[in-house]
Image (cartoon, rainbow, N blue to C red; front, top):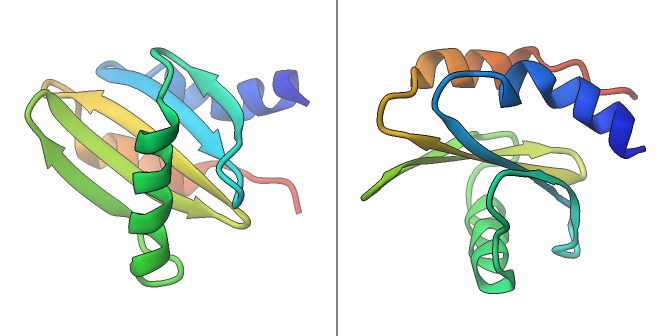
Length: 102
């Protein structure tokens, strides 16, 4: 399963400026991760943000060291951390173009 997810997310993980990618299930378990690990408190904050936004809304947070993009991928959440030099439009477009199996 991890090899399939890794292949699916490769266009995203290969982008310049992408620091980490986490795929988190609805219970807060990390299904797949690249880059620095996220702590359980951080993951819980991500889940709360996704739950409080519109059903299919992608949320972008501006942080001190870069950006965090949270995108619901039913029934999971995709969390992408980017540094300041990343092209956010390209990252968002790549997320939208990911082909998730039914």
